[in-house]
Image (cartoon, rainbow, N blue to C red; front, side, top):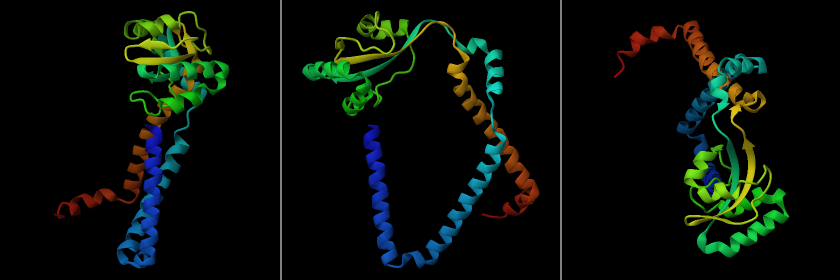
Length: 231
C-alpha cells in the first residue's frame, strides 16, 4: 500500500512537470495570473520560513528536560504486563507452499527478514509494509491471536519462529523483535518520544507568541474595524 502511494505521488509529480512544460511552451508563465500567483506563493513560503526559524530556535529540548518529565510521571512510563513486538510476513492460507519457502529463506538469511516482509506484505490489507507491530501485551496476543502467542513462547528476541503459524485465514512467518518485561520502562527507551512531545508542545506555544509579537509590531489588530466593512 505504501509502495503504491509512493508510485502514485511520483506519477503525479511527473504529470505536473509535463503539464508545466506545455504551459511554458505556450508562454503561460508570462501571464499575469501566473506571475502574481508566484509572488504570493513566494511570500507565503518566506513567511513560513521566518516562523520556523524563530520557533525552532526557541523550541529546543534537552535530555534533562525529558528526564524531569520522566521522573515526575513514572506511572505513565510503567508497563503493566509483559509485552512483545513482532515482525510478520503474512500470506493467505492458499499460499502455504510459498509461506514455507519464505520461512526457509528467512531462517537462512535472517538479516533479510525486512526485505522479505516488504516484498510479500505489499498487497496484504491491514498489514504494515515492513511487518513490524507495536508493543502487544501478552494477554492481548493470547486472546486475539492464540496460535501466535503459543508459537513465540520459547523464542528469544531476534529469533524467527521455526514454523509457519496459522491464525484464521492467514499464515504468518514470525520474527520476535523485542520482549519487554512489566515495570518501569528505561528512560533511554522513551527519551526521544518524550523530547518529541515536549518539542511539539513548545513549538505551538512559541509560534503563538511569535505571531502575536508580529501582529503587535505591525499593529495588525487595527485592521479588525476596517475588515468589518468587507463583504
